[in-house]
Amino acid sequence: MATTDLLIAHGELTQTRLRTRDDTPLAPGQVRVRVDRLALTSNNVTYAGFGQAMHYWDFYPSGEDGWGIVPVWGFGDVVQSLHPGVAVGERLYGFWPSSTHAVLTPDRLSPQRFADAAPHRSGLAGVYNQYFRTALDPLYRADDEDVQALMRPLFITSWLIADHLADNDFFGARDANGRATVLLSSASSKTAYGTAWALSRHPGVEVVGLTSPANEAFCRELGCYQRMLSYDSVEQLAADTPCVFVDFAGNGQLRRTVHTHFAGLAHSLAIGSTHLSEVALPGSGKQLPGPRMVFFFAPDQIRKRTQEWGAQAFGERMADAWRAFSERVTDAGSPWLRVEHTRGMASMPQVWTSLAAGRLDPRVGHVIEL
Image (cartoon, rainbow, N blue to C red; front, side, top):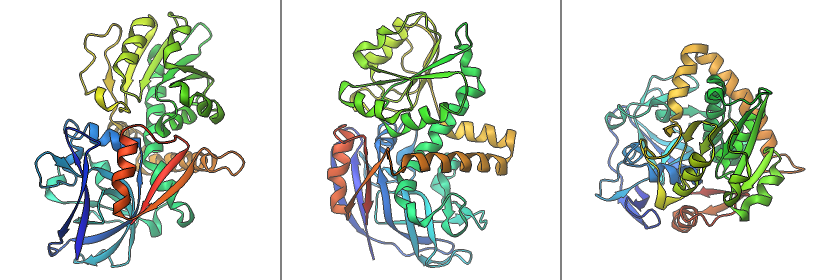
C-alpha cells in the first residue's frame, strides 16, 4: 500500500508537489485511515501561513526540510486496525493530512470519539487531535458530508469568535444607545460570514463587513451584514464609532487604516490571513495606534467554555448553532454555498494554488474526493 501527499513549500505557499511513498507497517494500537473526502478553504491557507509559528506543520510532519503537509478537515474510513477498540470500516471525521492515508494511535475512546495519542502530537492543541466516530457523532448526517467538511470547522471558529466577543461584552465598544459595532474584514470568507451570522444571534450588535469591490455584491446578498464597505471606503464610518475589529484578511494596510482612523477602536482581534505576503503573526502590529492586536486561538475559548458550562452543555450549544447555520447555508431558495467536486490527488495542486492566490469564487466550496 502507498500514500500520496500534497507537499507545500514553507517559504512559498503557492509552490506544491505530489509525493508518493510506501506505507510503513502499523504498530500495535495503531489504525490506518483511507481519507476519501476533504475540503480546501482559506482556513487551510491560514494553517499553512501560520504553519511554523502555530505548529500546524507539526500535526503531520513531511520528513522533508522546507516542505509541509497542510492539515485539512474531512472524512475517512479505517482500512487497517491493530487497535481492539476501532474496527475496520469505521467512518471518522477529523483533522487529516492532505494525503490519501493517515495513521492514528487511538486513545481515550468513547462511543462518539477518540483522541490521537501519537507521541509527536502530545504537545499540540488537543482540539485538533479529536476524531469523531460518525455512527454516534451528534453533528453528523450522511447526506451533508460536503457541508460538514467545508463549513463545520470554520463555523465552530466563527461561533467561538462571536461567543468570545459577547463573553467580553464587546470590550466596551458600545455607543450611547448600547449598540456594539463589529468590523469584519475579508467579509466574503466563510469564517467571516459565519461570524456575522453568529453575531446576529446576539442583540444590540451591528456587523459591518469589509471586503474588496469584487466581493461586495456577494456579501450584500448574504444578508448577514448590516452594512458593507469596500476596503478603500472604511473611513466613511465616523472615527469616534465605538467598535471592535476582527481581522480575517491579514492586510497590513487595512489594519493600519482601521487602527489609525477609529479613535473608538476598543479591541483588535486577528484570526487569519487571506493575504499571504502579509501574514500577521502573534505580536505583530506593535507600532499601530490604539489597542494592541490580539491573535484569537479557538481552542482557548473551547477550554474556557467547557470549564464553565461543562463538556455536555458546550457540545449541545455548539450543535444547536451548527444545525441552524447549516440549514441557512444550504437553504434551497438562497444558498450561501455551492459545492464543487474534484477527484483525485492530481487535482489538489491546482485547487490549492488558486485558493492560496485568492482567485476562487467565494460562493464555491471545494471538496476533493480521493
